Image (cartoon, rainbow over all chains, first blue to last red; front, side, top):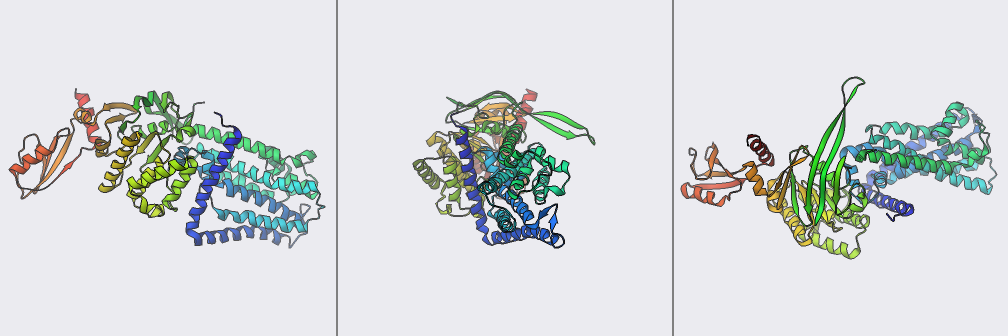
Length: 275
Length: 319
């Protein structure tokens, strides 16, 4: 096959784009419902942060981090999760696609099945969470005491992209479990939503073993904890080499590779390719 | 030229059932078990068999969704499972009970998506769409959301969607299921035209023998994952000693009538059921009845595929 990796990736993205566009227009057929759902999801996610604000009515600091710094963690973590959920989150219904046979109809289209599964039931109402997260991040930036050098600005941008990619890979990677075990939809949520909630708090409030697990196990520490240490100038509770604070893109790449291999293995098992 | 080739194709499924609290039992099921046949370019073949005979598994292997456990399989010169995406541009698939159209969008939008996904050249797209719209009478429906279409309209819409990219092979899974008589006739007429004018190879599964009678020069019966009959429909009727039924409404109730070449199998008031060999024409029989008895109404019923196959087995067992 003459198709190079870039050509295939570009085609996958285009397929996703075409399908997501169709779903967007489909949901616009029910405009009132769309507006209500968007309002509801924005309100619910906004309440999330209110909890943090209330906590700071009683304390100045949490684990050595100020309210502004917590806002930074909350904003970055929630933004990454929100973006991943909007772009590929639909993959969590893979088991249902298999049961209803939708996956088969996707496999007979000349477009990558993964792109189609991720775009399935795409809805712009999921933009509520990343928008709310970005607003809180912007607010937190006015509260933190940071001297904004070029490397810090750049690292923030890299963090937002890498973090979204890491969560996206986690969504896909854990969804592939459903190729073997159909009802595993809730299983992955504990890693995505659970992980994102954890990242909203400073690493110093958790046991060291748990934090180490987010570096060397499921590498969600690279979403925001590690780069935040550099941006906000905080000490590392694990005392890891400084390079870890800049390694998010590498972690994201590894996550993508792992998720890609898991998807391949799952699809092969589904189609019955001998091992 | 053979467009579809299967040589001793097998497909196993491993079924795991829980037998105890922790114990699980593995059982291997041969959904397709040593299937061999070829279909030439331009043929229209009926692929029939009881539920669970292996029809869908075959179709899924032919489209490349499923990988065969063993055997050799070629469609249009390629191995489907290996070149699934490439082959997808050259085949069309319609599942009668599952639409690929976009529920909340106008019919036209589904076709526009197909144009982009299948990368159909603009002039081919325009020509094919125009032809489908004309033959399937879709003109008034193009701007209607799919959810507002009737079942028959939606099936016509699905057929068009499967043919816009000029597929060499068209797989149809129960294309007339649930449709009314008029819609069925229209679908069949369209398929006949596509097969004749474009030379598109058609492989269809159905439970309606009329589909096969009107479309397919060849019928394959599959059961327990093997081909048990391959030939003409008439031959199948002969092999299965199948009978059609002439239902006559007489002017008044009578005891069972006597007509040469048929026997009465049921009487209910003025209505009587006459069974006659399926390969025979109904016309002389109708004439014979009308000549002897005052006739109010009549209809001819085709044998059910399940019955034909069941009888065929009975014959094999006796013979």
